[in-house]
Image (cartoon, rainbow, N blue to C red; front, side, top):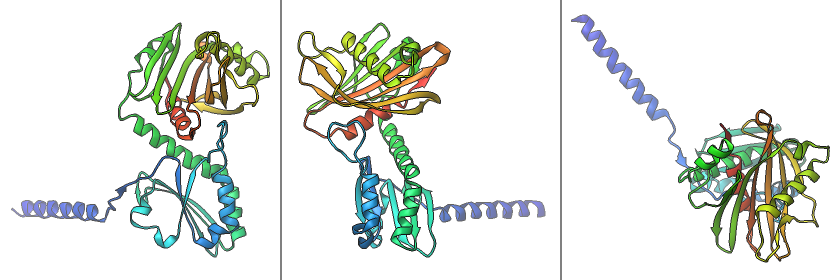
Length: 325
């Protein structure tokens, strides 16, 4: 009987501890905010001075490869006293404050979920700028990765079947049902989404490794590859017209990884030879040494006289979802 009583009180104590732990856990609201919109929490004097100028120069810099200047992030300054309630639920925020010591800190899910925040502090505006400048690349990468993750989460709500890609090219790719297969032939896939004032396009194909690696002129080889594919597979509205890389502006070339594999990332503008059409593109040439090929993933936008940053960002998030089987 004594053992039963001890067991009973032990169970009651355990349940009580669990209930206490639940109460102590902070219940976080769901985060909100437009994609690529960043809350800057700082007082008005800092925002209007050299610190704010430095932040705007770096975080609102023009996106590479777009035909018109559009900022990397749309910045929304909020005074610290106003950063509460709904305002504190923004998915990404940068908090700048005066402090006796310089500090840089990345935090996750502190005021809402999912949420990425960065705190920067310093004793003077010059010291705050020093901390920011030393961590600029990390700040941009942190916020961009958070936004890519959010975009891919939204895309995953309603996925189109990628079975054709898997069967033909041995890869999976997450893209929404709003897209459709416009052309599938000879291991070449053209996927399209109609939008207001234009369209968003995805190309997926493969080329032998020597097409890009035949010499050290990587960007030149990628341009030749794009133009050849455009002539073969991407016709323009007029007879004999086709898509090429815009000749007036040299594309930007970066190195990155897709599903752990080395890739060239090319950003620039396309045009149609023989017609008045143009827009931005983003291209990934992913080195697949096991199959002696480059898998080429490209997204491009046609949306004349309208902003295109968020369209290209959506295409980038889709292309970066590719997994090799």
